[in-house]
Length: 245
Image (cartoon, rainbow, N blue to C red):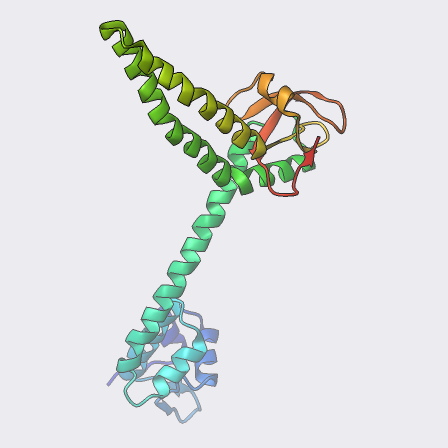
């Protein structure tokens, strides 16, 4: 039967001599015999054991768990449970890593839209990202409630033109005007804006907000703190998070 020295078994398993010595010191891989000169000699079974240890370490199992595994009378019954636990831990770690990667990608995407970058800009981006989902849900809610109103509008126009049923258009107007007012009030109560100059988060007056030029993400407003007049970033208004002006 073949015998292997510490250096030979380390080379065969692709690890360092110190790693083999460390496993020996932990009583996880004890050599089968010692030579007359005191050299540690490992058997074929020891080599197989070492390869199993390396496999489990590569899978991420801690050395203490491996030591406890080999101390059991029937380690094969436990290894499946340990691997399942490690798989779950790794999946959670991957999910957390993907979440962090998504945050980094969002920050990089938002940075491209910042003209004058500063340390404060990171705070603005963090605020925007934190509330982006809420803002998106609010906008979709408005769109979904507007679909029936829009459908009624076009139906009433078509029937008015084709059949002269003008009263259906009147019904639409009675529905659309209150809906438009309600949606506008709801929308303006749930949005705030970040000033690009002083980074103040504020809620402007309804009149200014209603008539201001705007894009999908920004609106031209006057900051109540620094007086800057320009495009301000729209965010979801946290309760108590914006200054009501």
